[in-house]
Amino acid sequence: MVNKRRKYIFVILFVALAALVCSALYFISPKKTPAPADDSSTALSQEPAHDQLSITNLYVGKADCAVIECEGSIGIIDAGTLESYNLISGYLQKKGISNIDYLILTHYDKDHIGGAIPLLSDYSCEDIYLADYVSQKQYYPDLMSLVHDRDNVYFVTEPISFTRGKLSLEIIPADEPTTLLEDEDNRDNNMSLVTMMTYGSKKFLFTGDIEKDRIAQMLSFHDDLAADWIKMPHHGGYQKIVSRLLETVLPKYAVITTSSERPPDEKLIELLKEDNILTFDTMTSNVYTICDGEEITVTKD
Image 1 (cartoon, one colour):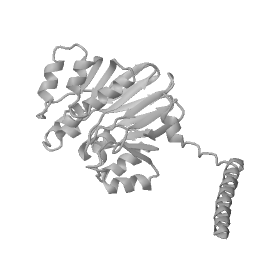
Image 2 (cartoon, rainbow, N blue to C red):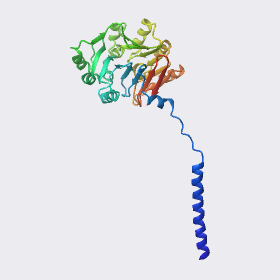
Image 3 (spheres, one colour):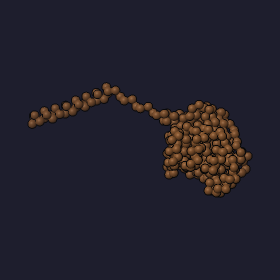
Image 4 (spheres, rainbow, N blue to C red):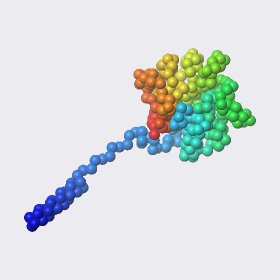
């Protein structure tokens, strides 16, 4: 009995001693330094400087809404769906935005103007730019009723240029609308307003939902489409002529606005990879672009 008791005490003492040794080793051993946050996380934690251009392509599903901030001015290109309006408004409120300097609605599909009606009701907007055609789409009558008595609405029939600080914008309508309007299936998409932005030495091309016939017109009528950054046409759909568009634009960055329910066409993704174009999409989060006039940084949440 005594030997057993001694053996039991010895075991307890051994375990206690081992625990003390382990604890001492833990405190005297060098600690691993946590890996630094990647560039994306760092960039997203910082607000853009006053003298920078910031573009946020919002996570609004298979739809379009881009918020442009530059030197105190606020612009929006397209307003997503009606269902995504709370998200859009929440983003604007979080940024402390109550006034919109310019709103560009590229065309009248519901995934581009669905949120425009509550947006124009809740926020003051200095200038509104609209495509000049009559649409049969769902929200077109309501939008027309809302803007018909405003004197700051411009139906774009020829290129319009304006500046906001150091940011220059050119809104480009269809060059031959009569031909495009004959195609009932694609008329709204092809009538999309295209916007070229210039900030410092960098250019940004927003293409709405343009389809092959409108792309062909753009390539025929415009020889100055080169840009560093492009918002890809029609939510990442693929058409053979897109390769010619990319050869003309020669972007380094591409943004695709769509949802996981309708992912970008694999052929388009392959094409972008072949051209070594860094590609970002809004399938799971916002896409943020910041430019200081010389360099562009694109990140995601």
